[in-house]
Image (cartoon, rainbow over all chains, first blue to last red; front, side, top):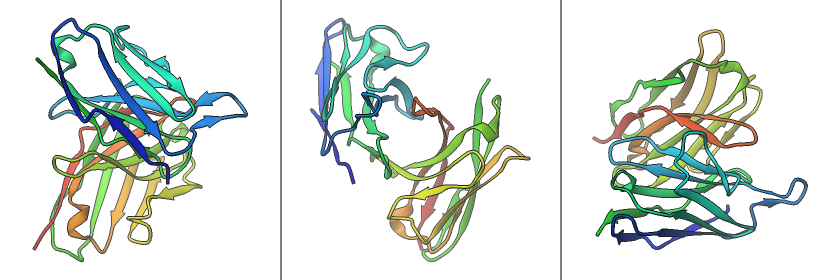
Length: 113
Length: 118
């Protein structure tokens, strides 16, 4: 199984500041045949189901604010929130869908400082 | 508007069975791979099972293989998860979700809670 490890486990950031969350996979999730990384990011607000933010490592889902961006390739990925807003308080998960079993990172909790 | 509405959760004793349902609307159900993902209380997300649009291919996490069965009824736009031999560690909120080829899981229901306890 591909193990997904996120860092940090939690962070507190002031409103308007930048947030960076890292995700590392135990093996590459890059398909060489199409040069695409099968890596997604989700946001889960308290009491809500997850909400897709980013897929294929860097493609923003329709309707997601452009302050959210994804980057990385192979085994190392990053989710960046360029300017933290109050509504961004949530737990963020990375997920690989390169192969079954699909696996998720343990989550990163983002709070307001 | 895409909607996924899960039902069938509840309290069951260890070794018991439950059948979860997920009613889908707002999209062409038979065209999509559907998935169950669970979340134990206060914990992270765990993929459980997926089924292709035709129902011809199914996939399971090792933790549920041989105990859970995923099926679908495309005539009724409904996804199912038959859960047998339930264990305490199966206690979780079970989400029904839609998977898009070329994207990933793009829409989730609100979930149905399964509690396995004596």
